[in-house]
Length: 383
Ligand SMILES: Cc1ncc(COP(=O)(O)O)c(C=O)c1O
Image (cartoon, rainbow, N blue to C red; front, side, top):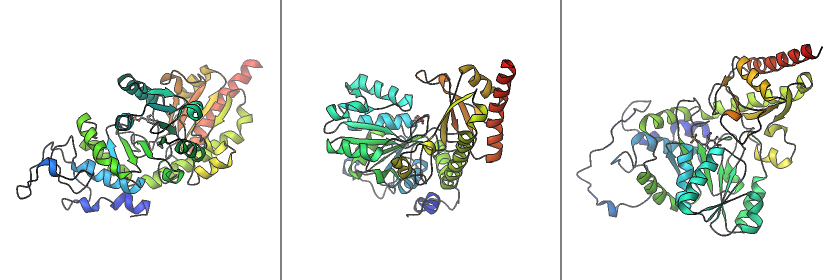
C-alpha cells in the first residue's frame, strides 16, 4: 500500500481479530496455543511475520504487531518497535557490534547510549572528521538529520557515498523529519531510526522507538535480541502509537508549515528585537542547494533561537503563554525549552522550539510579543 494517508490508516487491516473499528488494547501477556498446529519452536521460520500467532508478550503481542505493520508500510522497510528511541538505538548497536562508531553533534542521549555500549563492547567512538582515515568495513556512521536542536541538515547523500565506499554502514536518526517530510531510503542509508516518542507518537503521551532496516535478513535476529532484552513497547503504548500514526501526514505537514512561517517571521523581523535575539537557526534558513533537496517534503518543525543573554531565556520561557516550557518535541502542542536545563554541552543562550498545531497567528503573537517586550525593557533601561 503505497499512499501514506491510506496506509497509515489501513496497513494493519489484515490483522483484525474482532469487528471493532478501533483495535482493542490486548493486555494478556500469554496466548493460548493452537492445539491443532503445534510446531516445535526450533522449526518455526525466523522472520518478523506479522501473521504468526502471539505466544508471550515479551516476544510479540497484537498491539505491537499492528503498529509494526503500519510502520513497515509508512517507513518503507521491515520495522521493529521498541520501548523508547534509545532502546532502539542500543538494539542496533547490539546487533551490528561495530568496532567503530562515527557520530557528530546530535541528541546527547544517543551519545550516552553509545558510551554505555562502548563500555561493554570496547567500540571506539569517533567523529565525522575521522571517517576518511579510520572508517572501514562494518563500521557504523550515525547521522542525525535534521539535527537536534537546530533542525538543520548536512550533506547526507555525499556522506553516505563516502561511507559506503569504505564498506561502512549508515544509520540515520530521522526523528526530526518523519514522513511525509522525507523518505531517507532515497539518500542510500542502511538503517532508519526514529524516537517514536516524537512525531510518530505526536501527542506527548507515549515513549517508543522504531528501527527500520534495508536488509530484511536482519529482522529475525534483531527481533530475537529484542525478546531477550524485553524492549518491545507495552500494549497501551503500542495502541497509542497506532492511534497516532493514523493522523501522521496531516499533523506533520501542518507542524512543518507552522514552523517555517514562524521562522520566517522571526528572521524577517529580527531587526526589531536586535537587543534580545542573536540568531535564528533552522533548515529553511540554510542556503545550500543540498539542504533544499533533502527537505523537499518540508522542513522539520524544530528550530532554535539564540538569545544574547541566558537571563533573557529565563524571562522568555516564563512569559510565553502558548509555548509550554518543557523538554521533548513532536507533539501537537508547541514546546519551548531552555536547552541548558537538559543538555550540559549546549550554548546557554539557546532555546529550542518544537512547533505544534496551534494557529500560526497565535504562535507568532505569543513568541514575538514576548521578544518585543524584552526589547522594550532593554531600551527603557538604556534611556
Ligand atoms: C533525535 C532524537 N533521537 C533519539 C531520541 C531518544 O528517544 P527516546 O526519548 O524516545 O528514547 C531523542 C529524544 O529526545 C531525539 O530527540
